[in-house]
Length: 77
Ligand code: TRP
Image 1 (cartoon, rainbow, N blue to C red):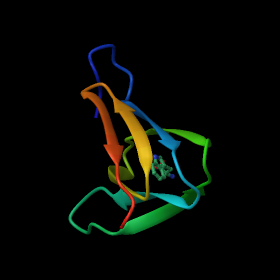
Image 2: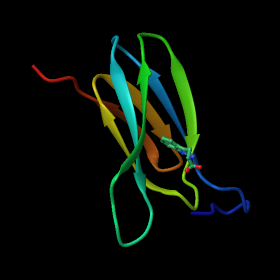
Image 3: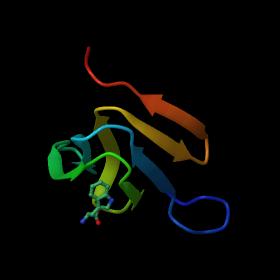
């Protein structure tokens, strides 16, 4: 959860199309959705992994930047 500087990891999500969903999944033995945020084209969300959030699912076309690198999610065709 923590990166080298002691801060919790952030990721940056930039929506490349309307209707991108950023979905937070719970930490612990029960993995379920706990929050869904909808982004429209050009909107940016900066999110952290926290004690409540162990995974983040992104649906729709977006550019995602993490400490591991940059990746684009693709929308359904
Ligand atoms: N209440 C959530 C938490 O503290 C908020 C949150 C943090 C979140 N990171 C997220 C929601 C990523 C969706 C996606 O964990």
